[in-house]
Image (cartoon, rainbow, N blue to C red; front, side):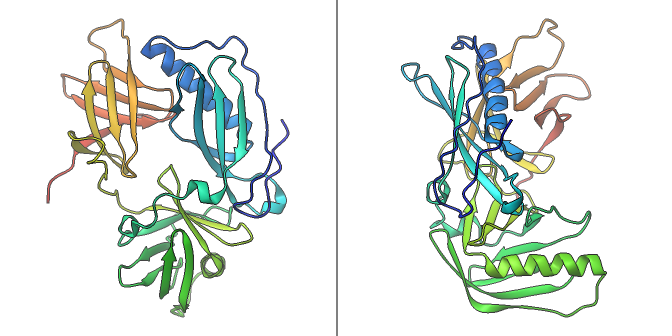
Length: 323
């Protein structure tokens, strides 16, 4: 499959059309059918995007009159000239034909309400990718935006700090970044130099649907972060009930309504997982949309909930203790 031709400049719309035939797809009528259809659309959109390490957002479902599901796909642009830059695509999946068309998402369309700066301030963001090259195992590069306009963190070995300003996703530094001069392993120092170079040149900041924080330079080189510690879910306006649960590195709010499990995430999104019919009444109750799975055991030593993404082994969920 040929990869779409990504624009070398972030935010510029490019024509990126890729059709993936899935003849025979039909409109779903039961929760199980919807789960199968969602898994199919996730696979089709993932392949149509052409991105490396794609992450697929929950479907935005339109009525049967249109028959379209829209998904956000984030990942790494595969073209060598993009130097491992992150990319975001919009995928429109036709439920009736099983075909998908993808287009590069303009930066302006993907920014997430960044005027509410407290959603990123005071959080220790840990880098999981530096310029498309990943990060050295067990190394730690972090970023924290202070409410006082200060930025600080660990660059891999040395600490750094500076001053910043943020205006609707446009990032600027009001003072030069200053780092300590501690001696470190050569590999860490090399990673640190790349981290600080990209950070100092970054001019755009985005909160992606995956919960990642993305800082990008005008040339498209980027740093991708996730919260180092779970963030308390900010879904009160969407889910009025539910007890916070810690499921591995994720904090969730979970409620049940008939054959549906509703999961609220830290970024405010809510996903509905339909129940899967089980032949054995003693087996765990399973809710899934093909991309996420919630298991509910009602009795026995393993009673409780567990959660997994993709094909990962479900992680037990523990109640979040109130402070």
